[in-house]
Amino acid sequence: MEILSSIKEIKQTLDKERQKNKTIGFVPTMGALHQGHLSLVDQCVRENEVCVVSIFVNPTQFNDPRDLDTYPRTLEADYALLEREGCHYVFVPSVEEIYPEPDTRVFEFGRLAEVMEGKYRPGHFNGVAQVVSKLFDIVEPTNAYFGEKDYQQVAIIRKMVSQLQLPVIIHACPILRESDGLAMSSRNVRLSALQRQKAPLIARTLKESTNFVSAKSVSEVIDYVVQTINKEPDMRVEYFEIADAYTLEPISKWSDAEAVVGCITVYCGEVRLIDNIRYL
Ligand code: AMP
Image 1 (cartoon, rainbow, N blue to C red):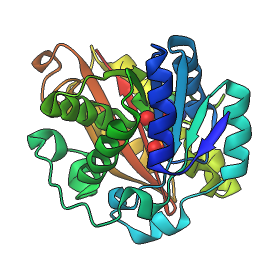
Image 2: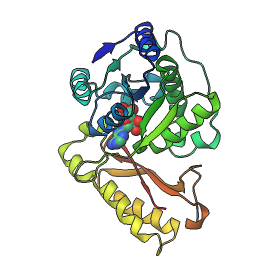
Image 3: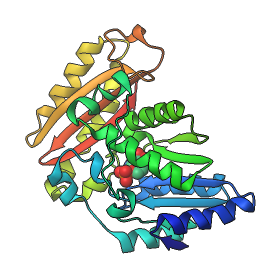
Image 4: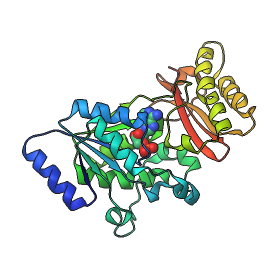
């Protein structure tokens, strides 16, 4: 496995691979890798001749400077995990390498970027689009892998790829969970022992709520989920929305959409956790 940090180096290296007609798969990450990330890498390794993983904590997608400062960074451990997973190239650029000057591009994703995460993290998806478009430009992958844990992010990336007419296939991969159901996240290490014990309530409540679809209305299910989680001291639901799984527009009746997803963000103490579940 090779670790590269300059754009010039990785472009040259991947051009050589392309000349040999090798397919290039790509997994963008912010590091602090866990099994969730590695499941994406595993799929990438299986489906491509060359697997590239980037590790870059992208400042432009953090709307909260404290979140950026406290974001876990575990590069050496990440390299060891990626090597074991069969990754071929790790791209670890500096902030100056990616942003030699401020990125002033403004993407227009319409409603898709205004709902849910878009409402609570203004500018977040613009930052995601800035970095992912740059990374796609550098790596030029045939396939790119994203986790469904960041459900809205996958929708945004698909929209960006279609707007920019990029020749990359986006793969959405299932959420990996701890054995108690908690969605794996780099942020989980910031939970106290007690918070870690309580955090699986989010996934448990979401899962339970899927049993109510035929008996309860959409707003009753929303109330159930929000109240159940908010009852726990130290946990506060920022938003929970039940939405059309494609447009992410909130629905008011189950029959409003063919595919339905529930997306939630919960503050567990100071730690912001997200999760989602399919209803239909
Ligand atoms: P991040 O490092 O948080 O930006 O995540 C990098 C990629 O890994 C994103 O596409 C995430 O959606 C994905 N990912 C993060 N956590 C999980 C998980 N628990 N299961 C599957 N994919 C995940």
